[in-house]
Amino acid sequence: MKVRKYTYRVAIPMNIDAESLVQELNIESRLTQKTVKNKIVRVISRLTRTHRNSRYFYHDNHIRICSKELQKILNRDYEKVLNLLKTEGIIENGKDYLPGDRCSKYRLKHKCQYVKYKYKTITIRQKEIESKTKLLDSYFNDKITIKSDDIYPKLIKFYSEVEKQLKTPKQIKILKNWIGMMLLLIEDIDKNEFWKSRSASNKRYNSSITNISKKFRGYLKYDNQQLIQVDVKSSQVYVLASLLNHQFFKQKGDYSFYRLTKDLIDKKTRKEVMLYMFSTLMFAQFSSKPIGDISPDTLDHEEFKKFRDAPFSEDFYSHICHLENNSFPSSEERDAIKSGIMYLLFQDLYAHRKNVESVKLFKRIYPFVNRCIERLLSDIGKSNFALFLQRAESYLVLDCIVPEFHRLCPEAPIFTIHDSILTTQKYKDQLYDVMNTVLTERTGIKPGLTVENIKEIDFTQESYVIEMVNRIIKDSKPSRYKELKNSLLKNCIEKAEEFISEWNVTSNHISNDKKDMEES
Image (cartoon, rainbow, N blue to C red):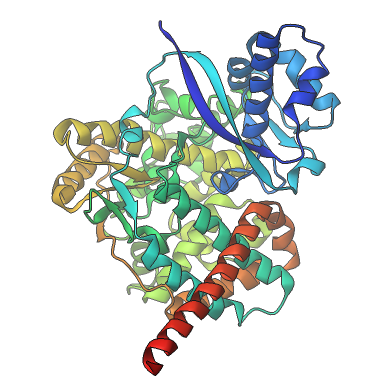
């Protein structure tokens, strides 16, 4: 296998001096010093929160890094470098490491978290291994453009409209952080400095396009062509329904409970979950049949089948409302049902679940499915349950749909945003057909798909302003702000302040020029 040199541009905190850290190791060879310094920078960069990766950190600034990844970076210097970084007060471990089953959490120490970051360029010799995301990576090229000149005047107007409705410094800080983050992401696209990678935790493909706000996606072009998006309706519930069958839990293939939870839970927990969900006793408790009529060889609960038979090709949230009330919900009622179902899937506060109307509705219609969700949340934890569903979704999108679409339309560009796929208008019908066929074959359930032309929007409209104001007010409440404050980055806030200052100067120049022209 060939060994090649790769150049990376990575971010680390301004107050970390990699050269000084290397000196602590008393390495004589200059070449070895440079190699170890690059390794130190790589490890620190993985723990540095930036505008590109901020959303993938836990609220306490931890991020999961498996020992395999660290071993690949550090090789024979594994213990030496980690011990140095811990001794020097640069990094620290999380507390939920489970040898052989769960990746450890790491984070930078407090003194390195709340500072600006700087960029370092490092060169690394690595074996030439073909990337699993090579196909998706290849479309991040100079054909991607963003109409930044059209965004900037709208963005400054959006800022001023939102800012005048905010009341506290915390709220202004949250707004500036968002503005700065978007500016840096737009700048990355303008400079063709794309960020893209497949997550080791949820297996999703993250990129400059997934990170940028929906408000700006209409300003993206590929080869001067507008993009379209095909989206899976009710994707989390749809994916869950496809997983609730005996075969998925029993087998060990790519799309199985074993494979998708391999480094999330231990063998004992995995076995307990499976025994619970497919035990005769549980079947009897939630079955219309008496226990004597239930065969111990029964492979699937009748309620799992009922759940999979729901009309996912239409609208699941409207469907369960119609089952309960014999009428379809308004758009506001549907959104409330959807929000409640997300709570049912991803929150484990059982006392509060009893007061959420959508949870009570779902429990009445699918009591055994609800019990299984609660058991999974209890046994593997809400974070791991979310990762489990995201991995299943990522497998279907990245490992099944994308290769098949490329096989049929090799010339078509492909971009993914988790449960949706983007391409150009020309390939809209082919993408829709591939997604419909592949998902039906892989899950046994016909999906609901929506096709959207991603158009430019005027996000300065009152509805978008109110939406942002409400979001910021919610985020600034003490309980929420405590979790959010670690994601407020100095680089982003300073970028926003520079932009606001520069635009005000530019605006004054424009106004004066216009006035001079009128006078002449």
